[in-house]
Amino acid sequence: MGSIQLQLQAAQRAKKSINALALNERQAILIGISESLLENIDNIITENKKDLDRMDPADSKYDRLLLTKERIIGLSNSVLDVANLPDPTGVTLTSKILPNGLQIEKKSVALGVVGVIYEARPNVTIDVAALCIQSGNVCLLRGGSDAIYTNTCLVDLIQAVLAGQGIDVHLVQLLPTDRELVYDLLTATQYVDIIIPRGSQSLIDFVRENAKVPVIETGAGVCHTYVDKTADLDKAVAIVVNAKTSRPSVCNALDTVLVDREIADAFIQKLASPLIPFQVEVFASEELYGSFEQLRYPYLVKAQEEDFGREFLDFKCSIKTVVGLAEALEHIEKYSSKHSECIVSTDEQSINTFLQAVDAAAVYANASTRFTDGGEFGLGAEIGISTQKLHARGPFALEKLVTEKWYIRGDGQIR
Image 1 (cartoon, rainbow, N blue to C red):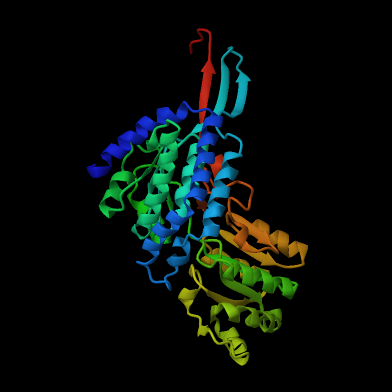
Image 2 (cartoon, one colour):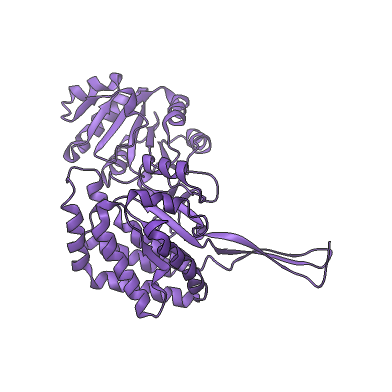
């Protein structure tokens, strides 16, 4: 398996090490990591700048790659949040005695060795390490080459904390970025228990198509906000602007606005001006292009078919009118990636219909889709947002980094 063979073997051995750690010992590791992040802010920023200097600031990945002092402090705090979460392992899920006297229990146990493949998101390095340690898992991190200096720095800090506490440093390992070695990870069924891809749809598709190790997807986000004819337009504008502009490079950011034809002109009159300071490029459908043009909106493009169902990851969004809730639901069903979808409405029947009918991991009424996040949902950090339906859906956080194990005690029973 080339140069990762030794790392895979070390990960397997590290399972015994982490299985022997009590919760308070795992928490001590996370506290140490949190403190180390704060103590090494300047060094992290220096290494991060080496990565940033190799990337065009106009690239949509730039913001995801960027680590500022504030973001590092946020990462440190999120590690402490994870440390304060209850242990997801060892929870008794089922307990019963059969008529034949067998005592049966089902408990939660760690997954084992977790491989995570991701792109230019160094925050994932910290989030995954913290979640895996707290849940008793070993992690193999394969970040993108765009973030190699930052990721190396962060993993070095983590391993220094582990070594300082006399714990196997191979609990957390950074794998090489060589593309050919990805196949070795994806097919390492003898060593790796689960693979989790986090990033673009092309990355997720690549992992799904080539993996022999079981895969849990964290999906790309094509997120819609539907503005119903009964919507409070001021609230709708605030929700749309926040969902699009607060951090456009992340998966829970807004991509498409659907607006009921009856209130489209009034809504656009209110929406256009707040978007201008952010230079949001609006891909307007034919019936709305003229409305934006009359307002002299400076960043206007005629929408094409491919602009719907597109994850922009930038200060860009598409917008079109629909005739009522039914047409909005049809559009979302056709173009959604099943991540996060929103309705803005004051009609309870329409809200309830939307929430029940839309097939997505998170459905919203009158709130920004930007809340789809493990931290915002009170789950601590997250590995990603799962859009599939097996094992985990929505924020893939600590509570889902476990599987089940049956314990049976008998007294000589035979079948």
